[in-house]
Structures are given as C-alpha cells and as structure tokens.
Image 1: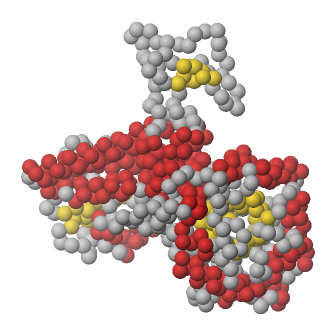
Image 2: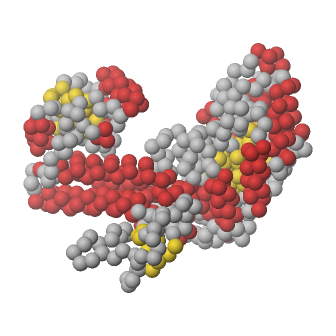
Image 3: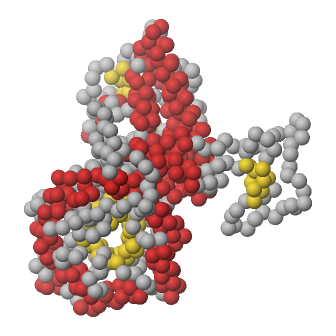
Amino acid sequence: MSKPDSTKRQPVTGTGRFISGVVEGFYGRPWTMEQRTELFKREQKWGLNTYLYAPKDDYKHRMYWRDLYAAEEAEQLTSLISAAKQHDVEFVYAISPGLDITFSNPKEVAALKRKLDQVKEFGCRSFSLLFDDIETEMCPADKQAFSSFAHAQVAITNEVYMHLGEPEVFLFCPTDYCAVFCTPSVTQSSYLNTVGEKLLPGIDVLWTGPKVVSHKISVESIEEVSSVLKRAPVIWDNIHANDYDPQRLFLGPYKDRPTDLIPKLKGVLTNPNCEFYPNFVAVHTLATWCKAPAEGTPRDVEMGDEEQDPCYSPQKALNLALTDWLEEHEWVVVTLIHGMSVLPGPCHPRLKKESSEEEPMQTDMGESPYIPGPGENPLYTAEPLTLDDLKLLSDLFYLPYEHGTTARTMLQELDWLKNQSQAAAAETDKVTAEWCSRAQQFDNMCEAVVQMFNRLSNAPNRSILYDLYNYICDIKSGVGLARAYVKTLGGHSQPSAQLLNDDPEPWGFRGGLSGEFQNICICEILHIKPLLLLLLQNSKVTIVVFLLGSRGAFCELRQSNRRMLDFYSKLGSFKLVQMDGLPQDILVMATSL
C-alpha cells in the first residue's frame, strides 16, 4: 500500500467527484484559523478535497445563527476561504438554525438567506444546513403551516438552496441522521421518507451510519438508507470523535468501513478529535482508505486475517500515518542551552537556532555554551521519540470500540496474573515460574509506557504535546497502579501507605462533582444488583474496586486465596460484608475512605 498522494486519482461515484475530507463538527473549543490552514495543506498533500465548517460552539454558527459577522470576523473567514481555495479544498460553510427557528415565519427565512448571502460574499460557494441534535416538537405556528417536522425542514432547505443558485455542493443534515434514531426503522421512517421524496435531488444528505458513533458501516446498511433517501449519502463519520468523553482520545486507523462502500456513497467526512494535532492519524488513514480502490492493486488476504478488505489494510495505513507523523513534525529531542537548541550527536553538539514565535529568552550570546566540569551534574539529555513510541501511543488510545494490540495484551496479562495468583502462591515450581515470567513481561510493558511518556514530554513540538498531555499523564497513572498491584500480588511490595491514608492526596482518587454523582449511582446499583461485584471480577479490572468519588472501596476474593485474604485482613481496614447472590467461595470485604 502506497502513501496518500494527491497525484492519485480521486474515487468517482456516479454523480460527480467523491467528497472526502474533514468536518469540524464537534462540541468544544473550535480550531484556530492557523490550524485550519494547516489542515488544508494536509488535505491537499494527501488528496482530500473538502472541509465542512460546522463547529458547534462557534456561537454564530448555531446559537446566534441570525447574527451577521462583524468586520474582523468577516476578514478572518474570507482569508480562510481563500486559503482553502489555494490548496484545492472545497470550503463548505454550514449553519445550524434548528435550535429556535420558526420555519413558517418569512422573516426567519429572510434572516437565514441574509446570513448565507454574507458568507457567499466572502468567496464561499458551497453550503450546508444542519438540523442535528435539536428538539423535534414544532411550535404552534409551524404546526399550522406544515404537516410534519420533515416537511418544514425540507421546505426551507429547498428554498435556501434555490436562493443560493443551486450550488454544486449543498449538504443537508437531517434530525434523524443515523439508523438508531429512525422510528420504527430506516425503511419505515416517515421522516426519512419525506426527506427522500421532497428534498431536491441536487442536495446531498449527511448520515452517520447505524449509530451516532458507528462501530461498523456495511454496504447493506448504506444501500438501505440510499433507497429511502433516493440518493447516495455523505457519511459524517464520528469514529474518531471524542467530544462526548473528555477522557478519551482516538489515534487508531480508519477502519471497519469496507472500500466497497465508496461506489455506494457520495462522500465521507471525518469528524475527528477535538484536539487538532493528534488528528494526523485520523485524517491520514482516511485519505489512504479513499484512494485504496483507485490504486488498483488488491492486497493478499490470508486465511484468518481480520482485515478482509482486499484493497485496504488498516494496520498498514496506520503504520504509514505514524511514520509520516514522526518524519513531518519536530519530534526530535533537543537540549536547550542559552536559548539555543543542541541536537544530540555522537561528537560535539551541533547548535541550531531555536525557532519560535515567542519572545526569545535574553542571554549573553557572547558567552560560550555551558559545559559541566569534572564532578558536576551532566546536562540533561532526553531520548528522542521513536516510531515504536507512536505505535504504542496509538495502541493505548485506539478506537471507541476496541483497544490496540498492546493495550489488549496488557489487559489480558493483568487478568491472567490476577486469576492465577492463587496457583502461584501455592509455590508449584512450574506455575510459579510462569507467573513470575509473565509478571516481569507485564512490568516491561508498563515501563515502555512510562518511557514513552517521558520521551513525549521532552519532545520539542510543544503544540502536539499540549494536546496529548492530559491523556498520556492519565494512562501513565493508571499503568502505575496496575504495575504496583501486580507486584503486590507477587508479594514483592506493599500498597503505598499514602493510598490507604485516611486523608489521601487528591491525585489518589477520582474526585469532583462528577465523581460524586458516579459514586452515588454505583452505590445504588450495588444495592439493587449485588452480582455487579462478580461481573467486575470478569471484566479485567483490578481485584480492588474503588468507587468513583473515593467514598468507599470493595474487594472480592476466593476463600482459598489465603495470601490475599491475609493481606487485606492485616490492613485492619477491610471488613467482611455479607452479600446475597454470590458463589459460596467468593468473599466480599469493604471499607470506607
């Protein structure tokens, strides 16, 4: 599989070129103008052709959609649209009036036209009307004017489309934009059938697949919705979106969408992570997927291979993306000396002027760089980031419905070490040797995560680091807890006294109001369904279950596991708790924090 390249021919459907690119359609802080311009450069380089401007929290896009852009805002948008054209990227301006528009009021329709006319003056030629994530109940005035919500949306969309001169690219996002929203089904949805029958044929429809965040999108599902819409949809793909969970990031490849879909679609736009810089992988692998059928060289698929697409390998696409990411950005580590960056080398350091938009640190450049003398501390030199580090990073933050290979292995090993600790405690030589060997392998994997964190933290490209930092800091903490737990299982260490303290440091537990809410809900579930503790045992989590909010902790263990029973008993905090519905050989101990 070759790299994404703009020289590759675009996949073509039956009605014009295949729309491919990025939708900035998430909730949260919008990207900056500079980041969007950088995105256009990437899209051009990789052969993508479209950018859909739809940041949910740009208040003039959604909440205050009637308001015209001020002079400064107009200048910024004009420059952005011009930058997109310079890089052969179609800039699609989206507006989302569905929160409060009165469809039957001519003044509202005029306000919508006036807003889009203003954007057209900025040089924009492609548009989109979005009616996603809104209430479906019409106001009394609209109920009198329209027979259904779908009729109201279609009427105003058709009118605006014709007012703008029937643009070549005009996208409509329905309120029922995925199969799970359709009542009672996709084929029997009166809403979708109205859209299919009444929406003008030159308007394309956005669709996210079976769900809002679709695990897989099949050819059959697209054929089904296409028959209802009477047109091939444009996929708004949320597979890399993370705005619904601020603790998750997705760095895995574009996958579980067969390339056989391409002739069945009008296009695909990825709505990726809120953080701009980590989206290198999401956009790069989408570009590889879009061109896979056009390359005309089906890859060999071995029996048992999970990747059954003859034209596209997610793993190969991921490797290409990570390799380019490492090469194209300043991941190489430098050592700062008096405002200069010293590149590591086997001989004398080579000086390179530090490039930055920030004001440089004032130093006396007449002095020679500091060189430690005998007996003094050497200069700190960090190791450079490697391709293996980026592969590990991707594995740890893979996709919504699956972990990467290394993450799965770590979970499986931790589960095995937990479940086999009793046999290892019996000191059977063969079993104990295997347990100790696998415990050491698990520890090595944990150490690799720590070293990856250290190298990322010292990488000179701080913009990428700042986007990643909260996530890699969190996984480092989690891996550290798992690592300590395995050592405790092996009898090599005791739990940190600080973690068992009556007044722990705040980083020792999940806090905040959200944590308290979860604690209350989990406690309620435990009262109603005590078997949850048994389920927790089988879901690859630690034997100690700390309730979010740090109000209490439970542990479950088998009566025959004398080592762990003795360990918890000697702590003096955990007490036996009687719970119905558990197997006879399962004990439950609990404590308050």
